[in-house]
Picture 1 (cartoon, one colour):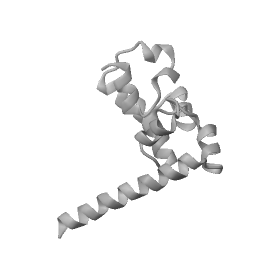
Picture 2 (tube, rainbow, N blue to C red):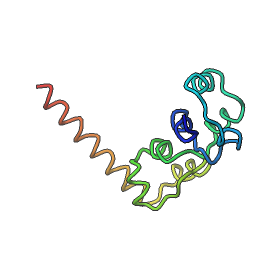
Picture 3 (tube, helix red, strand yellow):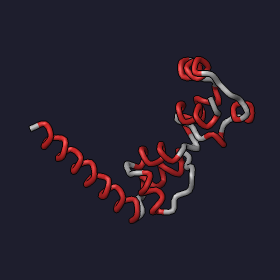
Picture 4 (cartoon, rainbow, N blue to C red):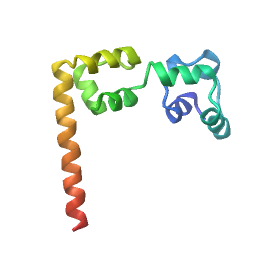
Length: 115
């Protein structure tokens, strides 16, 4: 598979990976092996980032669209995310509120379908 696909499956930001990984074409078995027994660079990336947009959005409790609306760059590390959570700017509060409304509406629709 392509390195970008492997990075997505591992939940990591491809430009932050070692050059060797970026140039590789790992098989599914190799990606599974990385999940099972991750090397130190992968453990470090998962712990401290930088993280890809979907992981950043999840850690902040907002959507990827919310990140785009706020002008947040492609990747943030753990310290940057921690700073945003410790002292949330107005855009983060607004996007978290928006995300909560979206989740509540999805739940309402799901309950309606179950009836």
